[in-house]
Length: 115
Image (cartoon, rainbow, N blue to C red; front, side, top):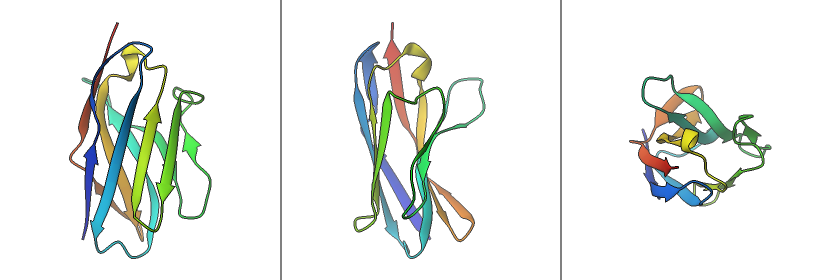
């Protein structure tokens, strides 16, 4: 089992910045992809960014150039630096990890961007 704990959500004005962090614990052997998804009210969960172990980050088009994801394999952590936030970025953000094809999710952290 892998446990994912997120932190760093909150309320920010449009144009502002937030940083999300996620720490994986438990049986973290062979974690492959780690990343972030988000779900806005009434919408499906969507990919924000993800990175395979030893690979490069894949961003959704909606956040390219504004969000930066980083990963520390030694600490089993990922972070998401979100700049130039827009009201449409408002959502619950979920940390995600994949271990040999099995997905794990964090509990989610709310990000609210006011206009």
